Image (cartoon, rainbow, N blue to C red; front, side, top):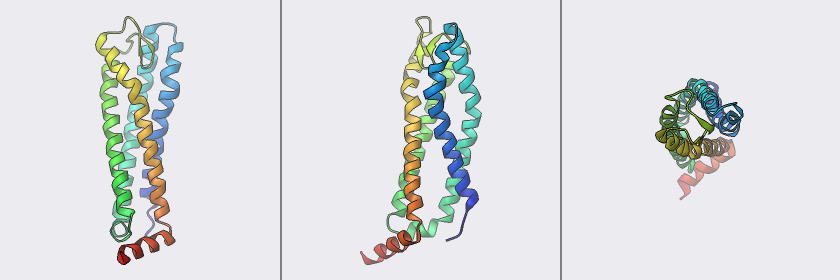
Length: 182
């Protein structure tokens, strides 16, 4: 089995940043923005933080996807021959697609919230009484989505760990034998 350190690194570092950044923003940035002196200041802090994170997140996602493709190419023969490895790859792909969709939807909502950089807010995902109705609706949806993305990427980390365990020589041997003995 060939080593592919570059693909694994892109996959893991990209996923770590995607997961960690979205979780950190949900845990700290969104609530901490409420410490601003005014509702408009809260909106400004939140929108500035998320707008600075967006290009880093996009790069992290791109790195993860490039690494994932590299890993698929590097493991293609094992994925076919080893019982269970293909199913794990499909689960990873499904979680990746779901996380991409959730991230994309969150970005669309975030753009609605950030169209006015200083939109009034009580916290990053909590509307103030003076928040425009369309922005308040987007914030309400974002209050859920801010947890969906790290949940999906966290699940992807767990399934990636399973995939790594399936690459142990004893697991490969056992999986290939299982494929031919059933």
